[in-house]
Length: 193
Image 1 (cartoon, helix red, strand yellow):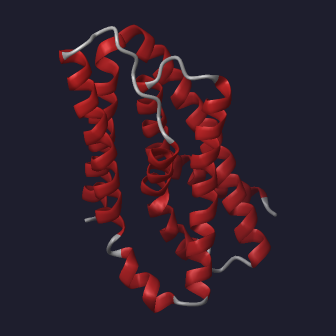
Image 2: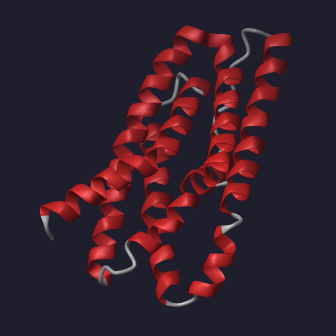
């Protein structure tokens, strides 16, 4: 492993983690009382997806390339749909909460929603399989693990920043988090067109 390989993998991880960072920020806003073990679980989920997706892309490049190229066109649509569904749900919950009982606690992020967020924020990492296609299996795995490690650290930072801001924003945090998720979905969609 060369220094160039490590630097490229870490930079690729930082670039890919930006969507997961923003979603982590929104999650922290939505649940400012989140415990550290849950923060680690959320960051770990995003890191796991960011590690897995480039490997799936790499495998597809080496096995079923023609099928993957057809699927690649659907990536922005899938991300847009998933993030708008989750963000819209958060937005509606935030508006309802604001209208009914301002003292009511925000609903905690469920496992199913977290899985959808993980898929939506990492689905574009499937394309990384093309950029690492010339790597041998061990190097592709090393690159994917580095991408996942960077994602984990960046998501922890996003959750911590979101929690702090969420404590200060109180009632508006869920609405802001929902708007952020919808915005990320739109950004992913537009950037892939």
